[in-house]
Image (tube, rainbow, N blue to C red; front, side):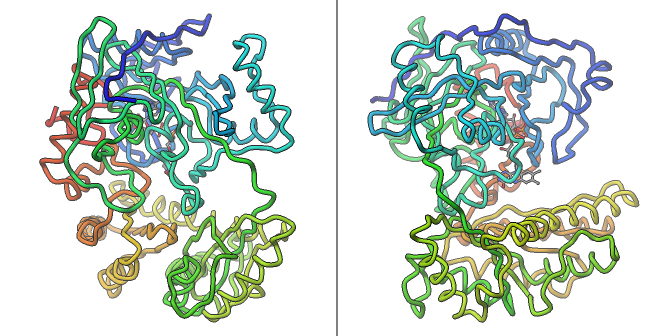
Length: 554
Ligand SMILES: Cc1cc2nc3c(=O)[nH]c(=O)nc-3n(C[C@H](O)[C@H](O)[C@H](O)COP(=O)(O)OP(=O)(O)OC[C@H]3O[C@@H](n4cnc5c(N)ncnc54)[C@H](O)[C@@H]3O)c2cc1C
């Protein structure tokens, strides 16, 4: 333990050279997909695309770019919605070719970890863990690593990686770079909690090999030491982070772990080339159900009760939710309207007539606990005008399919409405908020959304991770004027979330498009302190310039 960490040499691993495409035209013609992410942010351009195969190639690419003063944008699964992987000229560095599972380790406390390359997706890791078909060549490992791998394979249990970002094509390196989270983060926490180790290549060419617990700040100071004896000081920003799920800006705290500074830094400090993730034994089963309520207020009260906050209710120990996801009355109205417009061919499931709002909940169960859990949920639901009879899901596959279809259809329908408005007015895009607030401020924030939006013509829905007090408000402007009004409102909502002690971004990050929101949260001073951290890691300031904070600060 301590606050000095050595910068080590990169590891070559592949016999194949990187794929290098050196012409803007060829990138646009043959590799156009690499120029955008789900934000559709632009204009995007790249002079050179490099698809690397190993860590040494990452290091070579970064050193050449830094020497030439050329910007580098890091690209992974491109499911981001804040433009972080969208290049603004220079080199586009893709890690998609690095997708191996490198090994299994058993820690002294008995837990297993898995080491993977950054380009492996969340879905691919899930599948490999489930089948235990990891593709690791035990013969190439040292004896201790081989023994750990064999112990993992011989274990009767299966294991899983708990974080569940909605887009499971996301690459694991990027989920660490963005500290991704998902519905089950209510119970399991965001990605940060599940990362044991990282290898991160710096633009100077060296590698930080970081393991949790090994490098702690001295107050708010770290020292990085090069193999040539050079030292770099890193001063942790002085701001206080919100007490919520958070993906806005750099992690900063007294005596913090260096690994936490790197997690969630959105590729601005270095390129992650290896991640070591904690695994957990798979639950025997997961009960998923969507309950319906007569009003938004009933649904919110139910959530508070399920979280154990309502003094009126009995014990909620039995229900112990993994996830609590909300659909407000506007969401259901919107789906009903869209279903009617689409006619008989619509794939949107028919909602019960009495359903005004809904909450999806999930709980782990075993054969022994299932009855108790079912009864526990029944008791909580009954206090809020609902019941297990009045839910979709449970253990029935057909019901679960209906539930999944409903969940999927909200985002899909929102995107469809936006696409139609966009065909008429190309400037139009969805306005989505990503704010979270501390538990005591949930109703106030929800009421604020409602108070500001009711009475306006702006079409909108509110849904998402209510267990974490993290609601996604989606506004669908139908004209440039509505777009302007919606954007003004989004700023007002972000400001209110910060006033209530919350964050402007709980899971999507800041990327290239939310600098103004980050400034609301940490002020100009906080932004400058983050830029100082970046300069310490990336002295030539070529890596992901314009991501997290504006280029002018560098
Ligand atoms: C419909 C939809 C739903 C979503 N839901 C969620 C959700 O529930 N939870 C959530 O957290 N996010 C969500 N997202 C956002 C996105 O899926 C996550 O941010 C995800 O982690 C991005 O992974 P990716 O592989 O697509 O990365 P990309 O979009 O390719 O990159 C994301 C950022 O990481 C950087 N980066 C990528 N790889 C590396 C690396 N190896 N080293 C350093 N930096 C790197 C990039 O430069 C960029 O800044 C959603 C997106 C969509 C479109």
